[in-house]
Image 1 (tube, rainbow, N blue to C red):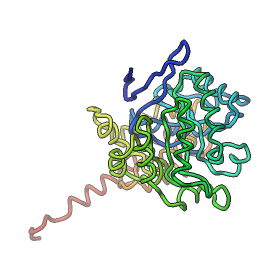
Image 2 (image 1 turned 180 degrees about the vertical axis):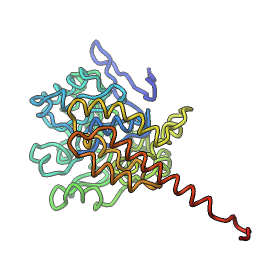
Image 3 (image 1 turned 90 degrees about the vertical axis):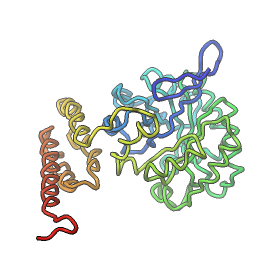
Image 4 (image 1 turned 120 degrees about the vertical axis):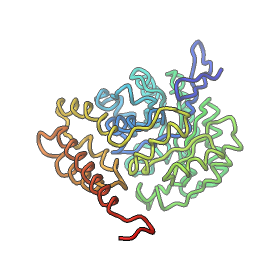
Length: 362
C-alpha cells in the first residue's frame, strides 16, 4: 500500500519479517554537491522551502566507517526530508552505511554512480561503476537488506564509449532487479579521462529524450532527471515526461526561487517567506553555531546569493564576504548586511517616486 508522509510518498515492500521502503516520491530535489550542500546550506534552504527533497554532500563509505560520524552525518531535524549520499563499492561497507543512516534518522540513502573525478575513480566508485552494473546491484541489495530506508541511485547516461541508450537501460534493469525503484539520471554521459568534474557537468551534451524514454520503458520506476535546469519553468516542463527533477548549481546560485516550490509543486497554502524573513529565521541558528566556535563565514557563504537581482545585493555580499571571516564575527554582521539591503531598497523606492507618469507635464 502506498503511504503518504507529509510531502513525501513512500512505497513499502515486504522483505522478510520487516517493511522495506523502496522509494520516496518528491517532484523536486536539490542535488548533492560537494562543498555546497552541507548542514548549514540545508538549514538555510529549509527556511525557503519546506518540502523540497534535500541531499547531503557525498560521504565515502570509508569515512562513515572510520571517521567522526557526528561531524560527518549530523543534521538538524528540520532539514528533513533528507537523503544521505554515499560513495563506495563494497557491499558489506555499504550495508553498514545504510544501518548508520537509519540510526541517524535519514529518510533515505543514495549511491553515487555519477561522479567522474579521479579521486573517486581511484576508489572504484562514482561514474566508473556504470561499467559494473552487477557490482552496483550487489551493493544496493546489501543496503536494502541492512536497513528499511529507501535506496536510490544517481547515475549518468553512460561513460566514455559505453553511452548508448541500451547500455543505460541494461544498467537500470540490472539494478532494478534488486527492488530499487528510484533512479536519478544526470542526462549527460561522463568522460572518465580528459575532462574535469566541472567540465563533465557542462561539456557533454544533454540528452533529455533518453531519460524520457527510460521512463516510458520502465513505468514502474521513479525516474528523476538532472542536468542543466536553471529555473522552475524548466522543471514544470519536465514533469510531463518524468517523475521528478533534481536541480544542482542553480539552487545554490539562485536559492530564493525555491520560495515558490512549496505552493507550486506541493500545493502548500502557506505564504512563502520574504528574503528578510529568511534572514531573520537564520539568526538564532547562526548565533548558536558561532557560540559553539564555528566561524561565521561557514554559514553566511551559503547566503550570499539570497538577494541576487535585488537592490542592495552587492552590498549584502560585500559585507558578508569581508566581515564574516573576521575573528569574533557574529550575528551583528548579518544585521549590518541586512540593513544595507533595506537602505538600498529605500533609495530605489525614493528614486522611483521622482519619475513623472507618462503623459504628465512638468
